[in-house]
Length: 279
Image (tube, rainbow, N blue to C red; front, top):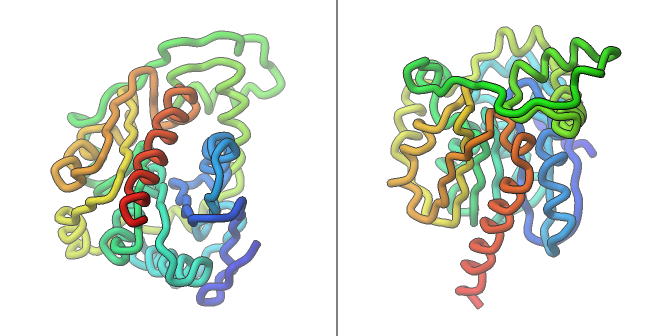
């Protein structure tokens, strides 16, 4: 499906009916990272309209010369939300860089967001996050079954550079949900794009609060976003469940899928409890 925003055909996929959930993927991947891990969960639930979009320059959404930074992308996201769901309240899930964009949505239209899930989130500028002293070291904790793969040697190599649990199953999920998007992103656009907000906006984001049910999932072995920066949200997110999960890197949803699924369901349960207060 296509939503035209400022002459950009934003690609998205939509499943189910009910309360809207907007899913925002991370850097250089596409909507399949999110739909690949969330759809198996929401197929078991009812009354949720899941909306997965491709960010500009990623997946099937083209880039544009005027999109220079996260301020511009946030502008597109707000218009996308308004076009697709109107004035409805919604749930929000952001992964990695999508978590950073989600922070902007909380700042701009947080009164419409009834719950948020942040998956291995980047919650501040890359310059702030990318501090070796605050990031854990990734290592492969378990590996099996990959030595017999010869035809996809390069894909296996890419996988092993990010995996913590490296098995045939996690490799297949990585190929379908992550690598598929990486292979088609607009490299020239992202090499010039500044994945940050302007400095004044950054300062404002460090003060935002969110008092609805939240779920913040981080990997103990995530060397890209870590867990310390996300942990600092807790005082400002009083309804947040926060997890630092062992055996999980930046692809936490693949490394430990059963635990991930259970925590997503817990988040939805808490959202539904909150909804019942208004009945």
